[in-house]
Image 1: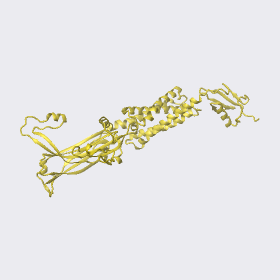
Image 2 (image 1 turned 45 degrees about the vertical axis):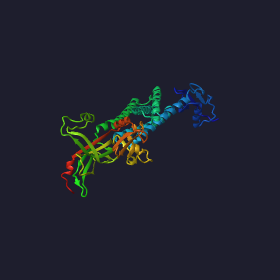
Image 3 (image 1 turned 90 degrees about the vertical axis):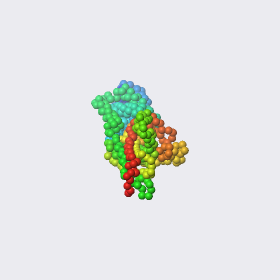
Image 4 (image 1 turned 180 degrees about the vertical axis):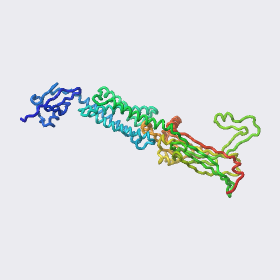
Length: 480
């Protein structure tokens, strides 16, 4: 029989792993008798080697029947830990990639890259989990797993906090809520086993995780809270009357009205809806009066009162959209258009009044799908999702599209939001309106929801007004 070097099997360590030596050289470690035979075969020993033959195998600290490893428990820990870390890596990358490459602010892009980096660390931690609960051939495997667990706990906690702001059931909650609970279990496991032991400079590694998490949190707060507040948004509107001209053939006065817009703030702005209207104002006068009329109505509406005016009526002479929904303007950008209103020269108006209004959204608070928003749908079209019988609702055109939040970190914790803008032109309901909500064409838009989204997306309305006495329109009057 061929003479072979004697094999020594050392006593099991705290995890049940037994060191295997061939001569004076440590060749591997084994969890079980089956694994021991595999190690010996790789080193040239026959598969049928008699392990009880003391001339070939020396057992220290227990014989061939002493294998205290809890195999299934260990494998279950590896599987559950690796699965959670891989799931967290996927979550971080899914959240981070859209912001890293397409966020609207620089701070949001930095946050996105930090999330992607965190996802890569989670992937490394999943691999390290196999080594730590395995042979521990890498000294840093425990520390890497510990870092991965801390990142998972920090990210899922942030997601849960953001979710509680609205508490909306979404498919993404099925991802981060169970993972939030998993992260506490994982933290309990790694703390109980003190897996950072044997790692060089564990406090510096923990400090690096804390600093990275704090940096991500500050970038998120800066891009979502501070920057939109510190950077002012302002849209200046202006209405100007031009020189009236008499029609060459009819007793009609053509009154030009110039509408002007300028983004005088420091952030780009979306136009959700806008419109202009020119009214003819007719007043009923009284010569003698001892007090201001309609004081109570003025207090309720914050309107004006006049001593010699008993009542006022307005007649719409012209109305329509200005730039139209979906247009957006960079800081300093301007836009002007001239409208023409025709008024009979013999009209009994006292004045002409023009209004220009617009509802605006900051572009750093969200992104609108402009390809969809620019396509109008008719309420009288039975194929449209916004169909409503004209006898009940009148007739209007609807602009509708999905709108995202400024960062994907918020988007994954909320239901989809949609911007809806409509323009109506009929005797009962003329004008425009716009809102952001979960409304998709069915049911009603809730007032409390629209008010909340006003704040979340920082919507605001601006207007401009101009008035001219009708006497200035018809007298003196020049022909072109």
